[in-house]
Structure formats: C-alpha cells, structure tokens
Length: 370
Image (cartoon, rainbow, N blue to C red):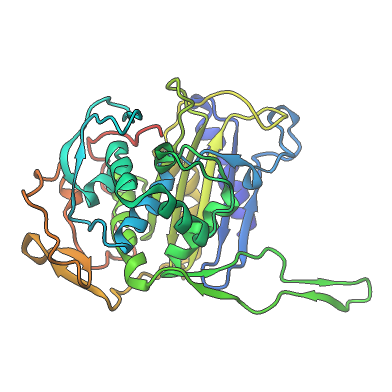
C-alpha cells in the first residue's frame, strides 16, 4: 500500500500542476488496529526545490473546512442541534467576526445536514457559537488533536493549525464508530541477531463517542463523494478542506476519507525548502478527484465494508426520513427548512452499495476556501 500511496501522490501532483501544486502528502491507517498502512510526507524526498525532506504529515497546516465535522459532532452529541436543525446561511456578524463563503452570499435557511454537505461556513460558525468553542476544542482533543487550537470562532472553519497525523487520528474515531485507537507506525524492532527488542503493546481503545453519535456524521459525509463527483469505486465518508490566508489565496487543500477498513488524510500545496511556499488554485474537491481517486480506486477489493445503523438511532421529521439520536427526534425544525438545493441532499439512512456508478458533478458551489 505504501507503493500505491507514493504513486497516487506523484500522479496527483502532476495532474494539479496547472494549479501551482508542487507537493502533496498522504497518510492512511487501519482504524480498528491503529496501524499506519502508508505514510508519504512529500511528493519527492530528493527534490530540494520543494523541501522534499520536510515531512508534511507532521507539519502544522490549516485544515480548512475538514475541521467542521468536529464542530457538528460536538453539538450533535450535546443535543444542541440535530441534523434537521435549521441554520442561517446568511451574512452574520458574530460579535465582530463576520465569516464569508466563496460566493459572499448564502443559501438562506437550511438544515444542518445540508450545511455540512455543502460545507457552508456561516452555519458552521453558528453551530460553534451554540455549542461553545471550548466544548468543540475539548472534543477535538479527545479525538486526537494535540495542537493548540485558538478558542476563537474562526477555528470552527479551520483557522487553527494542526498536523495531518493528528487529523487522521481524529477521523479514526469517526471511522471506528466512536472508539479511539492510537495510531502506530512501528510494530516491532529487532536487533542485529534477530531478537525482538521492541514489540508494539496491545491496542489501547478509548470510547470517545457512541456508535450512534459517530454515525450521524458518517451518514452525512457518505454523500460527499457523489455531491462533488470524486469518481471513487467504493463507498467512503469524506470531507474536503481548503484554507484561506485572509486575502483570498489558498495555501492548503485537503481531503479526509474513511470507511470501516481505512482512514485517509491527503494534502496538496506549494512548498519551498523551509516548508513554506506559494499559493495554489486547487480546492479540496480537486484533490478528491485526482490524487485521492487514484489511491482509493487502487485499494484492495476487500476494503469495501460499510456501517450498519447502530442502536441509539431513530427516525423523525420529514416523514421519518431524517435520523436522530434517540431522545432528540422531537426537535424538528419550525418553520420547515427551504427545499434542498440538490436531490443529492435528501437524507437517507440506507447504506449505499459498495460500488456505485459515478454521477456527473452537480452544478453546485465548490467547497468554500476556508
């Protein structure tokens, strides 16, 4: 799998050369055991012009909108919102902070499910304010984010730096139905005589979320690959992230993805020998349809498992089509939300088939550069 990851990174950088991308990284792990399956820290270790010996997997970068699932998860598990809660996607001043989307507009009143699927910034900040950033940060830390996160609302849309290693650890909790298993990249070490001098200890599992709590996010993110036309040959849950330097320029683009068999983090950018570099033109969706498409579609056929609906999930609202944590199903929106902008947003709880023909990309907005 390491060879597949290296090939995918190299091909992805070539495909995104038009967007000023000269470097990329990928980390993949088994969410059940925590074993790292592939680690590519740069597109070319020997290329000094991109700082190829600088390991982007362990470097702090802004995750953009790929941070939003932590925000929504915190509010869902604390019963501050449900996936049916109507949020306001209109320009809003949050005590002096006014987030924007790429279109400088909004979709109006939309349910939380739609807001996350379309990666809208203003609703994510609204949810963070409702939940409290201290609670969001506390959950992100429990899931694996160790970098210092700023308590300001901009962190809700990816304004604080973190590492890919931490981010994959965080998404491992989603992939493993709420259980955290620490990632490990060394299983054993032998000395010169073949004696084992180090053996990885047994798996240490911590329950961070219930299976039902993690399933809510997974049920939204499983639609992401179809919404944005990634062309993957198996079902995954995924989320893009595109950072903004405050001047409308993009330093980082990410895609995080998972199913029960694997959790993956990918990043592309433009680097120099010191780990810095220029800006790129590629949104996260471009990473999903190039670099990560090569990797996902090249994975072993056996890595096609999907999740069953766990205990603790019930149906309610909209004719019983939406899913809720048990006890929150009566928190239906009033007034009813505006019609969904796209048929792909219609909530559904039945698992999608493991191999689904790739639909044409919908004429919907690109992920916002945050």
